[in-house]
Amino acid sequence: SAVISQKPSRDICQRGTSLTIQCQVDSQVTMMFWYRQQPGQSLTLIATANQGSEATYESGFVIDKFPISRPNLTFSTLTVSNMSPEDSSIYLCSVPGQGNSGANVLTFGAGSRLTVL
Amino acid sequence: LAKTTQPISMDSYEGQEVNITCSHNNIATNDYITWYQQFPSQGPRFIIQGYKTKVTNEVASLFIPADRKSSTLSLPRVSLSDTAVYYCLVGSGNTGKLIFGQGTTLQVKP
Image 1 (cartoon, rainbow over the protein chains, first blue to last red):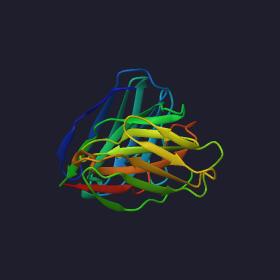
Image 2 (cartoon, helix red, strand yellow):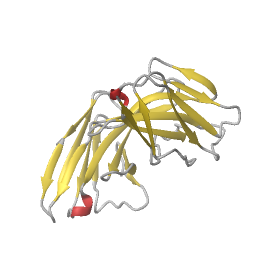
Image 3 (spheres, one colour):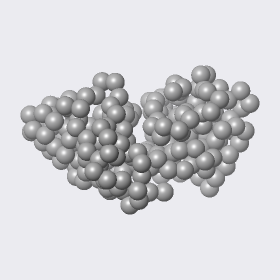
Image 4 (cartoon, rainbow over the protein chains, first blue to last red):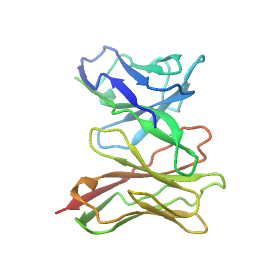
C-alpha cells in the first residue's frame, strides 16, 4: 500500500489566519481525499482532489474555506482559511488502494492536528 | 452510499474473542464491506474487506451472512493493544471515497 506523509503533524494557530497542509504520496495516484476528524468524532470527507482539475467538495464544504491544490499525481495541499476555534480538528489525507477482495480501500496519512486559539 | 450502524462502545478483557456487528440494511449489489481500525493520533488503518461469506486474514475474520445486511468483525484473543475505534464501511469502491459512520470504541482491559 502507498506511504503517505503529511506536514505539519500538528500546529497551533491564531484565529483569522490560514494554514496549508501538505500531503505527499510515494506513488502516483489518480484521486486523493481530504477528511476532517473533529475531536471525539468520526471522519468526514471534505473533498476529492483531482489532478488537473478543480477539487470536488462534499456538502457543507466550500472552496473559499478549504482551497485544495493538486499539482501532480503524488502531491496535494489543503488550506484551512480564516480559521476559527471550530476548525480545530485532525485533517487527514488518503488515497485509494486495493483491498483483499479487490475493491478499493483507503490508506491514510497520520493526520495534521490543528488547534485554533 | 449505504449507511452503517454499529455499537458505540464495547468492553473486553485480554485473551477474549471480540465480535463487533455492523448493520447495513441498504447495501447495494456491488458494495463491499470494509473494516478499519484507528488508534489515537493516527489515521484509520485497513483491517479486512469482504463481499460475502467469510474472509480471514492474520488480524481478523469477517463474517457476512447471505443477505449481506450485516457483517461481524471477529478479533481473536484481543490484547491491550487492540484498544481502538473500529469502523465498518460499505461502498462499491469505484469512486474511491468512503463515508465513515461513528465507529465502535473497543476498550480491552487487563
